[in-house]
Length: 402
Image 1 (cartoon, one colour):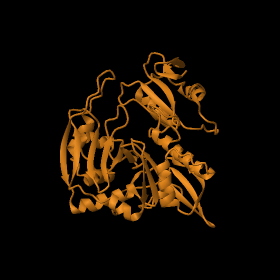
Image 2 (image 1 turned 135 degrees about the vertical axis):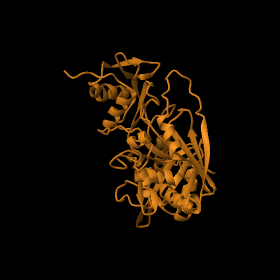
Image 3 (image 1 turned 120 degrees about the vertical axis):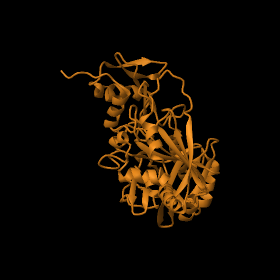
Image 4 (image 1 turned 45 degrees about the horizontal axis):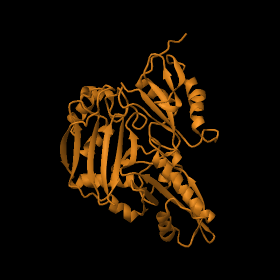
């Protein structure tokens, strides 16, 4: 008989990943795990429908845990379903002799912990269906009027489809111009391009103009701070050993081309960069969280660095789509992301990059800040996995300068 293993944050994370559950927010379902190796709560966000096309409901949360997840946990010690109302009214999976537990929430259900970004996409779908039916009882009436006046004009909306659930991957790549953000979407090769509206679309609206039908690609974003991309740095993105192999972290000598290119683009100090991760100290789950102290360094944006950074930003931001941004005050801002608009959006106004290195083993991420004419940008390079003390991901968040 095979030996049963004790659940840990690391092996439960690996199991969920192996089962195909994403650790990044998307409409097909994802999970949010503990931020440290001593954490205990995993949340699986269920999509609007299961693989059979049936809608997930509150009752479906229990069915998922009992019928779909629990049979996959037989290699662990004492997995069981139980109701612990202080954790979740939908029940949880817990383990004998362990504090770790797994609960579920519904993406489509608004409220604390649910994905408001995903809900916004479905709200847009509802509004466009209202327009198609002619009832015009809109959730966002000002936005719908602006969209009709500025975009649809004399056309007729004939269909709308939420496509954000496809969660298009955007891994980093390299060519003779340097680093760029690629797009893994049907019909796209992954080569450098800024014409990425098809891949970014969360909602597709078909509009009829006489005998011609045009598809409009809408990217729906929610909140004050929004994510442009989230790329892995491991061997799947940068074969064979990742951008920052573990053995290079141990030796302190970086030789991998992709890793060196990232360090050079942002002007990162290799030793400080390494120290952030190798000197990280795992936090106790019962300790009060405090803001990590940081060492701040500025790196001049030379003419050469500016050209490469702006080229990189253009592949991140893209053009040929409509950006619909729902802010924290429930106002929807509409942007026609043309190539001209892109050039302005990617035009850097900062004279230097601001690098924030956590000190004293307080965090395992590095922040890099800069501004363009339209955005405040924060890149971060971090480890997302408990117990892993080398970089696993790079992402870019932004704030609009409305």
